Image 1 (tube, rainbow, N blue to C red):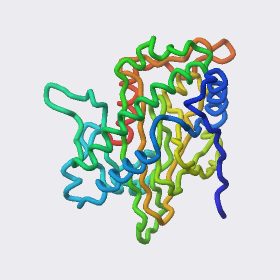
Image 2: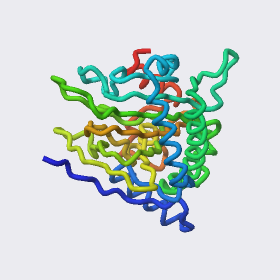
Image 3: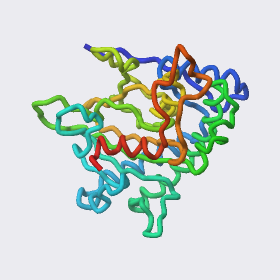
Length: 307
C-alpha cells in the first residue's frame, strides 16, 4: 500500500511581512518540524550545477573516494558504513556521503576537511556559502517565531562562528537482493539547530511526525521545484522545550538513484543550549538539562561512530 504524503507549509524567505512569515514558521515547526523554503537566494540553475558536481564526485572509482576516508567526522563514507539508528541491527544505510565541516576548520596541523577534486570542490564551496547565508537569514525569523528579539541567537553567541556542516549524499538505485529490510537512511533526527536540504527530486524521504507513538506512522515528503526542505534539529527542540519538533526522518530505497545535499547549521560549539525562559514554567519544567553544543554533538556522533 502506498504511503500517504505529507503536505508542508511553504515559507517565503523573501517576504517583506516578517511577522506573518514568523507566524507561519512557528506553526510549521510546532506541527511538522519541517517546511519548504522559497526565495532563499539560490537560483535553480545553480542548484542543478551543484547537484551535477555532487554526482560527478560519486561516479569516481571507490578507491579514489576512499583516499578521502572519514576522519574526525570529515571525509568520505561508503555504502553500508553508517547506521543512523543505533538501536537497529541491520548492516547499515544504503548510502554513501562526503562530509565537509566549517571552512574555518583549519588547525595548526592543517585543514580538518578532506576536499574532493576541483569539479566537485567548487559545488561544495558554492553550496556552503549560499546555504550558510540562507540559514543566517532564516534564524532571525525563527527567533521572532519564538516571541524573541530577532537577534536573540546572535546575542547569545549561537551564531558567533557557527558550525556549518555540508553532507553530499548518494543513494544507489540498484541494491540487489537482500534478506533484511534496507534503508537509504535509517530513522533519525538531526542533531543541531536547523537543516537545509536540496534534492534532485527523486522520492524516498519519509517523516514520522510523532516519535513517541508506536507503531510509528511514516509519510512521504516530496520535493518542490526550486524549494529547499528545512527541518528543526535536536538542539532547537531543547531550546524550545519541545514546542518545536525535531522530527524523525528516514530515506527508503525507490529503485532509482537519488542525490541530495544537506547543510546543517549548528550553534557555536561553546554555546550553552538550555530551555528558554519563555517556554518553561511550574507546569512545564525543562525536559532537558543545559548542555554545551559541542558536547551534545560529540555524544551523538559517538553513538553512531563509536568515537
